[in-house]
Every structure is written in C-alpha cells, then in structure tokens.
Length: 318
Image (cartoon, rainbow, N blue to C red):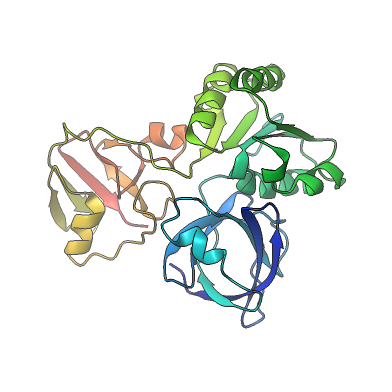
C-alpha cells in the first residue's frame, strides 16, 4: 500500500541509465530504520506502482534511497521515475522484506548481477556495521553501467570486501563464482539478486556447497509456469468463509471478487505483498518471493500465483 508522501530530495546519475533517488518524508518525520534487504512500493507520477529495493544504510532515519534503471521496454514505471525532478512529491509504502540477513552464519556472500546490487548494498552496510564476515561479488557487463562503483571501491566499509568484475564472459563468470563458493561452508549464507539466468548459475554453483536453504534470492522477473494441468480447489479462510477456486483463476482474484480485502502489489509472485499463512492443506508454490526453507515448511503461500496440491486449503490473511 503506497500511502506515505515523500519528496525527492536528491537525484544522482549513477550511470547513463540508472539514477539514485533520495526520498524524505513530506512532513519531515523519520523514514527508517528498516531491515537490510527491504523494498518499497513506489507510485510514480503516472500512477503506476512498482517495487524498488532500498540501497542506503538501513540505520539512516532521515531518508530512503532507491536506484531506478530505465528499461528499454518499460511499461511506464521506470520511465516515469526518470522524469522526476528534485522537489517532486510521490507516494511510497512502508519497507518490507523478502530478503534479509540470516543470523548465525559463519560468513555471508553477496552476489549481485547488474542492477541486482540494490538490495545487496543495504545488506553490506548492515553486515559491516554489525562486524560480520562478508564478501560482495558484483558482476556487470561494463564499467559505464556499473552503479555505485566509486562508492564500493573507495569507502572503507566496502573496499576490502568487494570483488568488482566487469566485461566477463559466461565462462569467466563461472570461474569467479566457483572460486568464491570454494571458501563457503554448510553454515554460510549466500544472497543473490540479478537477471534470472545469472541467479540460476549462482544457484547451480553454490547450492551443493551451502545447501538449498542457505541460498537467499530476490527476483525482479516472474518465472514462466505451465498451468495447463491446473484444477479447481477450495480455499477456506480462518473466519470460516469458503470459496471455490476455478482452474483458470487465482486465489487472490476470487477473494477480491467476493469483497475480501487482500494486500497486493505486483500480482506476479515477486513482491511478497499477498503472502498469507497456510493453516491446513498443501500449497503448490509458484512464486519467486518465498525462500526454499519457507516453501518447504508449507505454512505460507503467495495468493496471486500459487495453487493447491490438496483439495482444500485453510488460510489466514496477514
């Protein structure tokens, strides 16, 4: 829900296609602190709502920072934010997390591809302030499109912990990833964000070392799902209300049509807005927001895309 009015207090061109927006509350109240890895809903001047990761220090209560990459095939979200000027007012939602720092890990490895640096940058700030052992591997196509390069190479928090690589071939990227994975243990935590193919390569390399539940991802794109075999099932709310979910409808859409208020945003299984508790039944997860451990537990699901393996689910809206 985007209901906090903020002023664009500063705009910095990180690269020709990426701009940093610093946001302060219109009423002057503090905006933080927040948990590292968080993102916010942003409603731009055209009314389009999109999610953007916070990339500043989580302990900073004065402002929030987001980095927006203008996509060539933008549907209006990133293009509109690239038209903003300092002093403009927009609306945002409160920070919320899909990605977060895992306590108790012996070391933390952050792996960013391109604009995927944004959530991992806030995590690097928090890991440094907490005295944790961490390395940030940042891979981009070329220097001119590498956001935050000067900050990462020169600030004391990062310069000895960052491995910046530009212009690598796919084979060279694998070599880099295999090298850093070799230093991990089953007690290490890995966090990655970037293009889907990049994160699939990261998962392929690090999962055998740390285990599936110690790999934590954040996606910018929905994964294609074959829904040709979908069947109907029943959803019951903890209030006792029951609804039939047809094979060609989502739980979210059926609940909304029946006047049930569900918090939502992307409706693609990415942002985590509609994740709700599962009290009974077995969900069929199709989202890109819950972790492998969350999915294995089976006590949460994203209502916008996921379905049911059992004839009936009992859920509790959050």
